[in-house]
Image (tube, rainbow, N blue to C red; front, side, top):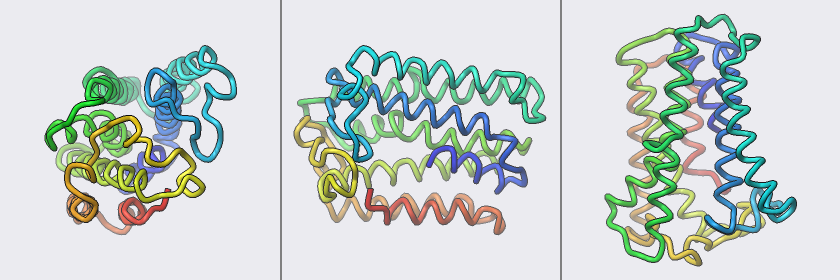
Amino acid sequence: MRPILAIAAAEASGGHMNMVLPFACAIEMVHTYSLIHDDLPAMDDDDLRRGKPTCHKVFGEGIAILAGDALLTQAFVIMSHPEYACGLNSETRMMLIHEIAAAIGTEGMIGGQVLDLEAQNRSLTLEELSTIHRLKTGCLISVSTKIGALATGIEGKDVEDLTIYGRHLGLAFQIMDDLLDIEGSEEVIGKTSKSDLANHKSTYPALMGIDASRKKAKESIDQALAAIGHFDHRADPLRKLAHYTITREK
């Protein structure tokens, strides 16, 4: 979903897929590395991912850690490789690399994961939970739409609006993840259900209830759509992705 968001944001901004493709691929590599590490016994200790045994279950913990490390490293190889410049100048490429690095570091995805680990076995406030998910899940989603916009050379409010779209979409995506963990079956969602409960994690349904959580997800999608309301038909894929986020079953 994240590379699709980057490509869709570029197209909504008047660009084309090739301008952002290396960065979209890098984002998916980063996301996959985070899932491999997230499934490790030291983290969530999950046995299933996308309907198949997790990486450490098949290859062992050592190889799983190295696979994640390799994916993260290779993401930066692809983004910085001269062969994949795609017509972008060095300044723009450096800016995109910086945005992605910032989104996945200590003030983004990794920082959110740290807070998530520290939050196990204790009750969180809604504000604390929102902070964790904004960093752990939301940053990588919002940077996807942001770099898609920046790659095309647009500036100002349009970049900000596409970033806001990604931020609200990320929140709705996480809320739906929390709901699917409760309501989904392992056969459909492709991973162990009710793992949040087993790991004693605070979730939106646990703090707000199922109905209120679903309403919150819908409100977030409405805000995402409002942020790109002034974009023309080229933003329709982003609108469809927003609707998919709150109707998905896995």
